[in-house]
Image 1 (tube, one colour):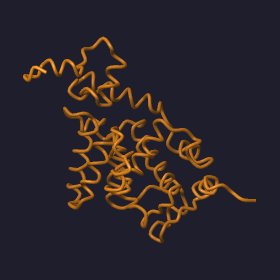
Image 2: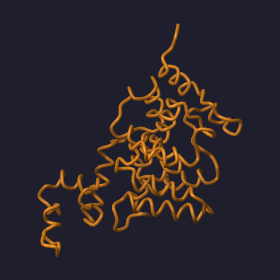
Image 3: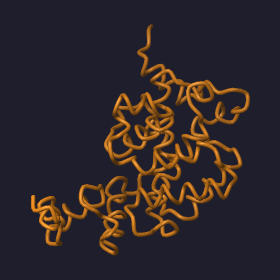
Image 4: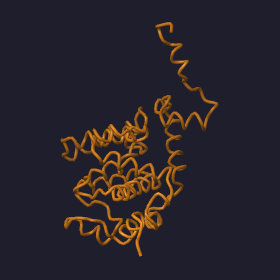
Length: 244
């Protein structure tokens, strides 16, 4: 009996049949094993310590879903993408919602800045810092949907952002059969997307500079608190000295 591509992928993921190299023997035993390099382990320790459980679980689920996305596109870790780099993007993409990286910028940029410092502090000085910064700063903008962006940027960015997006607006049907249940059994949603939005809202209410117009935090604040003043496009033009 023939199997569909998605069913075959599901059997591979749920049955620990990822096409890993010998360096990833653990992942063959456990399909939900996370990268265990020293740098990846420090990133895991960071989010375990600094992120609320619902944010930490979302970050890890985003990575695991990204693995499934990569597999569906025929991309294997090592040859098709750098597994550690993709994990760093996913693990740290919401670090800006933790107090450790909470500054005056929208959480995506605060998080990207912190992630870059984290990598540099851990001896990473090559273009991986730029890749992680770009991915985190822009992960709510839709840039990675552009075919030109995908062609001109490393694949870890669009794969990671796709996986993260599936955890927000996707469904079990977007993943191989049984895979979502497998992931959720270990990393439960704990309120999921709504809890994440609550975290964004809390930051924005405490510091409106973190919710500029047109940003995800700004839109969450506008929708949930229509009574608050909101800087519209016309209001911006009204302050211009050009008289347009």
